[in-house]
Length: 120
Image (cartoon, rainbow, N blue to C red; front, side, top):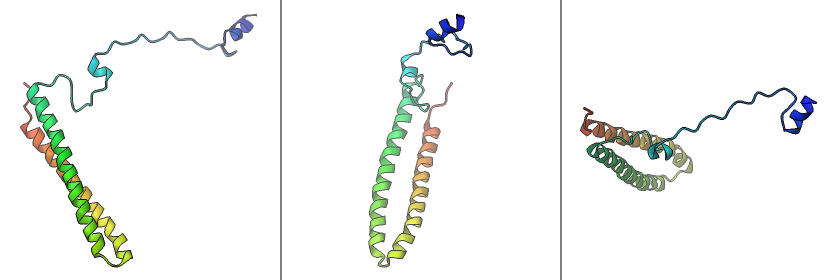
């Protein structure tokens, strides 16, 4: 009778352990919207401006590098008459682009860290 009553309520015959529901934790607005780890909500105005400026420089310089590299790669691609050499030229073009983009990002990060105000 006891197993039949449990099955009628949707429990299995293996005597499931029902655990109490976890209590909801009240989070502030910044935690609720998952602010990226790079922008903690307790930054000062100067710190925030430096970090936002760094992000904008990364976006603008990265986009400019991508555009100029694309034009240069297209010109190199068109200057190579042999189709096999065109394909072989892709690897160095992509590798050097990735190195240049990484250098730009690391350089901007170093400058942002250098001019960022130190926490007191």
